[in-house]
Image (cartoon, rainbow, N blue to C red; front, side, top):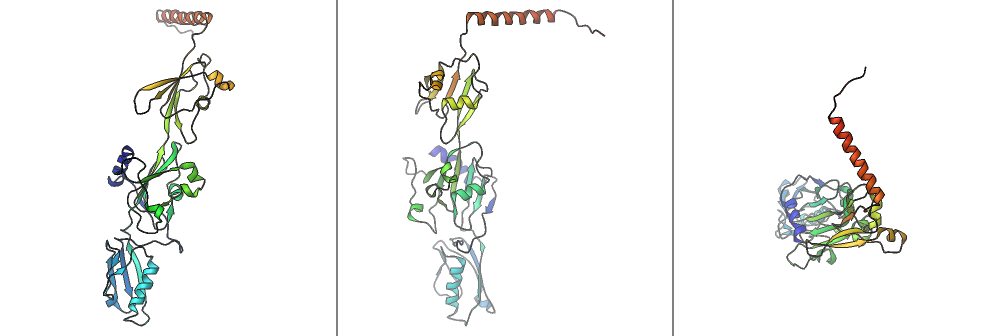
Length: 329
């Protein structure tokens, strides 16, 4: 867990090149809620002595010229606060006309999203937003995306949060780790409510990269493959790289797998022929597996032919290197 969060620290606090972009204009039924640090400006038509410019304090309140006591502004919409302030003004003025606007939303820490999305960025939220929308706003996921999205809740939500939104804990056993939760990417894309949480200011979203497995030896296209959500079996992996070569030793394919909590590897043998026939269970590959398809020893006749071809190539090479070059016109 600590290893996962360490790069996040540098991304969030290291001033990487990410643009802070408002997601969208608040809708009438889903308005921006004021937070400590937000700056406000109020103007009263024809009564300039009541005009004010102020910032919401850490306690969530503001001081205005026409109120002897602080006015709570935290977690209210502009409309709600305007209505309350107009009621206070009515103590002094008849039918007061008050305009109120937020001049700077300093109270909202940006949401950071990075990893396997097309646009790593920071986003200023101006309304309630869920995980699926943040991913879509970032251009969607790349081909290298694994099946997991991790959301780190760096600060407790200030407004509009339920008990479930605030009571996040670390997924590791270390209580000092930043609270986070893991969500299935496929479930997010399918619109599952459980996998599509509300995102709050300060959240850090990491779309994780798929772990690799490596296929080498007597196969058509030796390469690394991404182990995505849903997993990958040996037969699927072999099919994805075009199959095996003619001389492949398919009765004894070796899988070199990391032992848990160690850099050492164990060796797993698989009979690919029996797996294809259904006589042996297919093997689920794990992150960083190395699959080696060896070459068969071959028949005596094949070995003699290979030797003969090799010897002939050697003779041709030595002869061609010892004669001159002429041009026939």
